[in-house]
Length: 67
Image 1 (cartoon, rainbow, N blue to C red):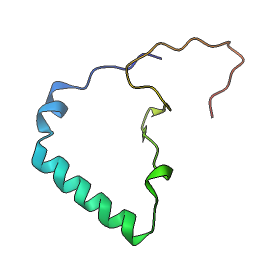
Image 2 (image 1 turned 90 degrees about the vertical axis):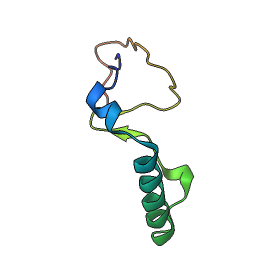
Image 3 (image 1 turned 45 degrees about the vertical axis):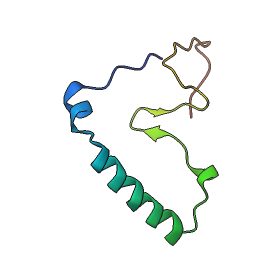
């Protein structure tokens, strides 16, 4: 699996102010529902990868099924 670079329009829309606002809202939800940070996973519409910081190509056997 190779990750694609972020679309330039999406990248330009991210401002420090929007990120700060998002983090504040996230903190409110975490406190409200008593969610611990250790239970947060990096998941998006394409799935998730644990412990991968940079883009990587993953090669597996064809019988391996992803959940």
